[in-house]
Figure 1 (cartoon, helix red, strand yellow):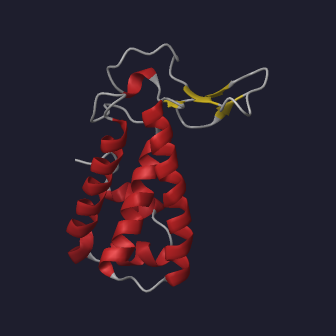
Figure 2 (tube, rainbow, N blue to C red):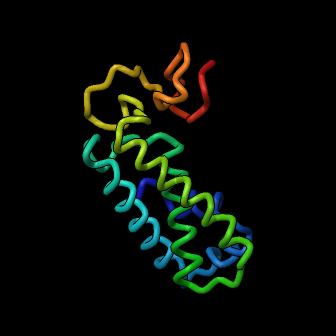
Figure 3 (cartoon, rainbow, N blue to C red):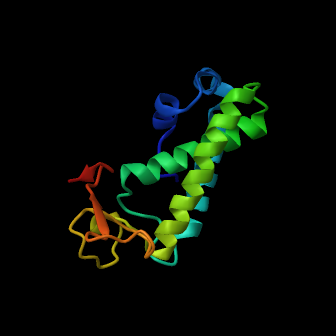
Length: 149
């Protein structure tokens, strides 16, 4: 079972052509397969740092899963939107970097995402690299993914 539902995918999938294809009942099983596959990819990256599957994943993890599923859907179903594929491909590449950052501990998920003990009190913490480290080396994000200033 994926972190996101079919309704989440239909509401947030990009580009518009993907949403129109998602409305076709025959494809709903295929879309759920892509969502499940995307969750497997996300879990594969973070399983060294967190207990998977996450019990309450933050929204940005769900968004990563949705973009990966959308990209895989576009490629496998042959949806004819070259500009859409290029745009989502760039986003998915960045998502894989974020997943690697989670795996390496540069991004810390909220404590309630899984049973792993954590002291971030429900906030995601982004650590800057040593070359860009300034007085404040941590950026705090709330559980919805918004930066806490």
